[in-house]
Image (cartoon, rainbow, N blue to C red; front, side, top):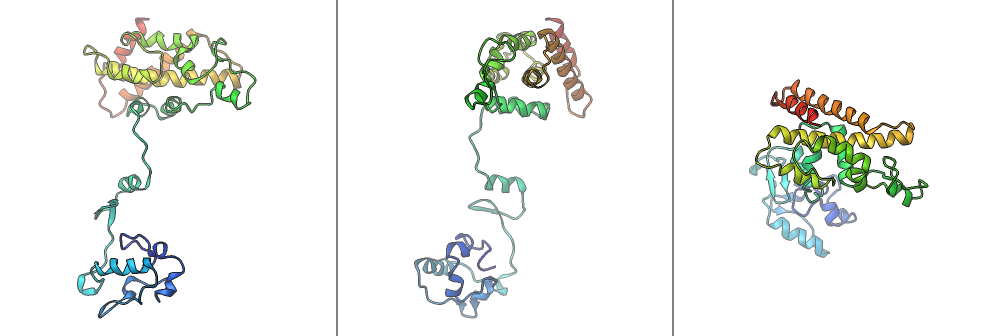
Length: 275
């Protein structure tokens, strides 16, 4: 279509020239590009505006769309200056969206062996988007911002993961046996997992990723259970749940078609028995 298709780098001409100019150019709104071509070349009236003049100049540089030049074809754009012959939804999505800078901690949430439900909560925590009580208090939604897990300090993302006395014990109960100096900051765990030392196996790195994801999910669930159900778990009880959750994640990996080291579960049992 002459007016609505993107057949020049000016974009849709109905937007470039203006909605009132189809009549000025004497080309119907539903006309094809061939309507503007005659045996002598492009057939357009004299320009009455700068944009119409620019269109004349642009068309003079294009090859005439006549049958002798072959049939029309679609061209999919990989970026504004490169066209490809095959449609790709991934390339189209990259072209349409406005990308944000890559964050270094994204492998903590989105790794192939992770659980999407757990990863989503961890992603919200890393972005500081969970409705913690410090936020709710500022919004006037709650009467107190005190942490529901320790009842000592204000509940915030940095406090919950893992500076709270309750969450520190749960996280360190297992993390300190993976390798030394497990951090108490959610973002610092990215560097901790990425730089475990030369003596650590890939299994230990994978266990650290799974443990972190499960810990964040379980602590947030415990916090919500105390609010909405009035049920409280002791540290030992929650550690038992965390152990079962990590074990189930490992068993699901071993039972899948992924290439997982069979010793992964044994490595986890070693950590559990070291406590």
